[in-house]
Image (cartoon, rainbow, N blue to C red; front, top):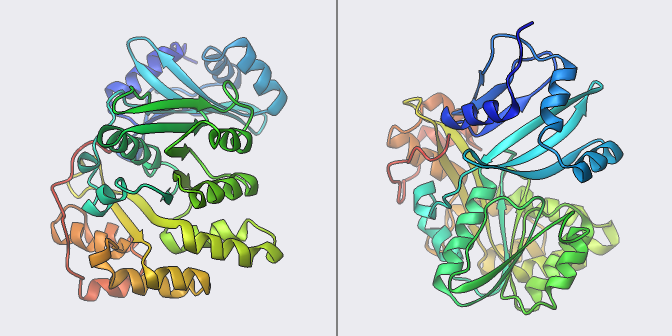
Length: 366
């Protein structure tokens, strides 16, 4: 078996290839995700001992102890001359494996990412709950960072972020930005979120709504006049609302539904689709902006009506994922096969709905 290189070599190669992630797995070659596809970085397989050594080389003593105790670990990794990464170490079939997400130093603007102008408008909100949702690897963290950047440049105030781990590094501008990392700056999301309410914040950012207590406090923070931004692992706007409510016991759900209907301002659900020219991926997004009809739907929990209300709510800033995909297809940025794979309703493409604000996609999504 050939000799594996150092972990820094693989991370550097992944970045040079324009990759979004580096994956280390036992009995597989190290691989980078480039344009949504896995590209092997070696022509040989890594054995479990080599994989473990490469991974442990990125950890401090405290992080190694945490991994030994918990069997998995999220952390941030900064390598001089290469860049910043979000690492996740886990065990699969008894072997240590890892995924490293490259975090660009540059925080892109929303327009660079390909977001609809409705998302720009969301950044002008002063209170309420805003969710950025999508599957793993759909660019939620990048969109959230871009929104924070836009807010910090266009208003004065205090932004408190609670992250696990800290990914993008922000500089103070018109806003003072306090970034807190779970595990090193605070013991957990609930306590950090509760304490954030005492830190005179204007904007509170939660990198992920993971549990009942975090969601409960986030709703309360939005209800008491703060702007709360958070991510959620769901595929579209209706499912995002359903997920928030279903976390709670049945006897508490009526109260949560009422609370959510009052504080939810927007849901931005996104996915990355392979470009027709093979040059990376392009963003398709669904935007829900809460209006009177949508709030009533949430309150009465008639979530099956939300898609229809978004389809006719264009003036309020709404757009469905199918409208976004149809626009990309009409502009020939994606293939019909990709459109049919990612759409909600295939019959939508019998007569594509009108596109809006579709711009030439950037190559920022790898």
